[in-house]
View 1 (cartoon, protein in one colour):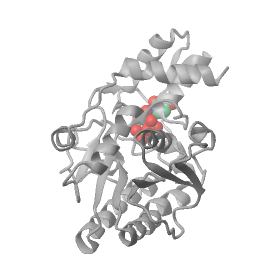
View 2 (spheres, rainbow, N blue to C red):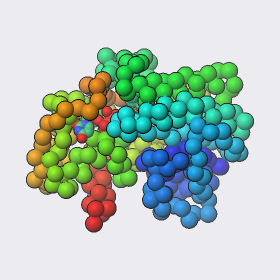
View 3 (cartoon, helix red, strand yellow):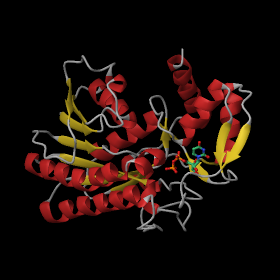
View 4 (cartoon, rainbow, N blue to C red):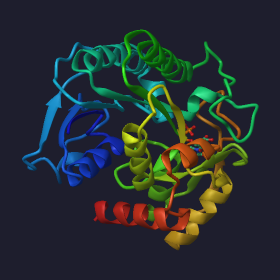
Length: 309
Ligand code: UDP
């Protein structure tokens, strides 16, 4: 198939492009390189079935394609808090431009949403039916509200324009090429360099961490499983850890002498608990994560060590 991946030079996007090429598809990677990089796609840049298009998704795009994975957005809190005026349009206007393109091409469409649409959740674990607890005017709203709008727009195109679209809600993902201020790359980088590991607040906040190869499998399953038009799927690993536990696990695997220190959180409205209920993805997509935290962290640490040589 001819497939477009927006944000294809980013962390998850670059892994997704590589997997789609392996599966024999032709891939057009669309990215403005605001957070993605040519380094991320260096391994696949010369594949004949691959092309890179530098483009800002808020501008109209005309490509004939059979499937669109829309991943283009800043996704790390430090990045979107610093660039709110780029983040909100990428998710709102960008999603509109790509849904229009998908409709004209009669292409399948996958909107990469986020666990952030649940805000600071009052239900635990989070099921797709839960509507969330979001501060619509808080500093994180440039991201979580624009993703909520993107979900709304996607469902509107399903209902009123017949677009074959689905939504996935990505819970915290990590792995090689993720180095953008999120918790795993921060802790791993600090442990590898022997610097203090910076736990925000008391470290009792929880996250559930999914390794990138599992996430890519989930994205592909959501796009290509029959009868998923209009479907909404949580994708993540339901194994939940406090951030203090994570700091200790990273420190142990790295055999690091870094002290674990507590610093103030950079963000108000930081969700206190986050864990996906993935029953729907298990049942409808036949998908569940396979890579455990230790194995995934070992791969990630190896990438950090190689890169810092
Ligand atoms: N966090 C931390 N130390 C860091 C970076 C993040 O303790 O150096 C915490 C952060 O406050 C949050 C959790 O780790 O509670 C996950 O943060 P991340 O930035 O990875 O993404 P989020 O899940 O908030 O979107």
